Image (cartoon, rainbow, N blue to C red; front, side):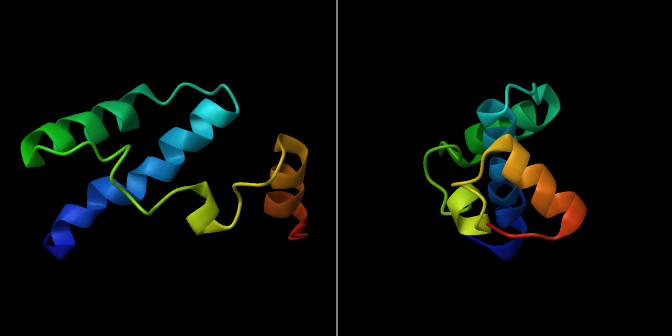
Length: 74
């Protein structure tokens, strides 16, 4: 996979974050699905870029907001 193909993969955590906290992300979801169809892959399933990769997979909504606004990483 070439570097330019990674653009779709890097959007996956945003979509997963939306699912985790019940925030719809239809535009990003569509981009990921279209990119996956173009490359004949499921980028939602075949990516290492997820919330754990970003180091925030374990956080609750309150912890994530505290991290974003106050810089406190739990």
